Image (cartoon, rainbow, N blue to C red; front, side):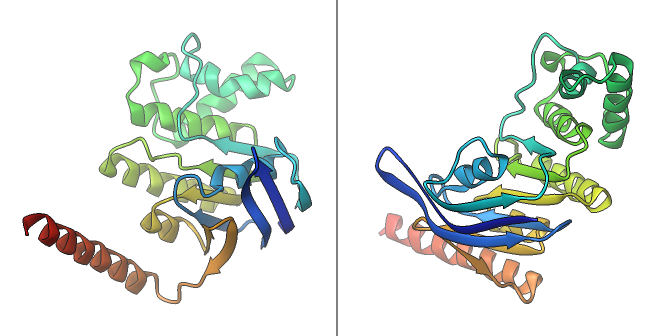
Length: 232
């Protein structure tokens, strides 16, 4: 379980989160939706314990945390399997055991045959798959995902989103998925939290299909209004 209780945190005199309270149950996936600078990454860092709140408490039931970043953060001088194996090696696991687990996760993510490829030899999507495999190879009980597909094109992001959701459903980690895209949040999570003006509130979605249709209708309407202003 992850529990925030009246959490406040500021940086450089700017309030990032104010009186934030919410819970994530064991084996649940939630999405945190917000614009750039709304505090999404800070929230993940609080869960990971890399920053501490100014006031309030953050309770995290397990120290076994995996993290999927916006950029892949692979070491260019290591092969794909050795990038994945590195966290287990750092934890004292034998080299062959760590590499065997790395290959197992690469297979699950469609990377068979690319064990000994270096990052420069992989496409952007493949590098992000390696990053995902690295996060799961540490056997996390909590998975944190910070806009992991925002740098990829739409079709590739869609495929990786589908694969990640499938892996999560089988692995059953407690997961927090951060995004600024409502459709992504809707696809990934059982519950959606909106970060706005330093506070958080849950967005209830009774019918995901209707919510998604309404979202795209608003985009089309706003685009039409903007186009009309430019034309005039």
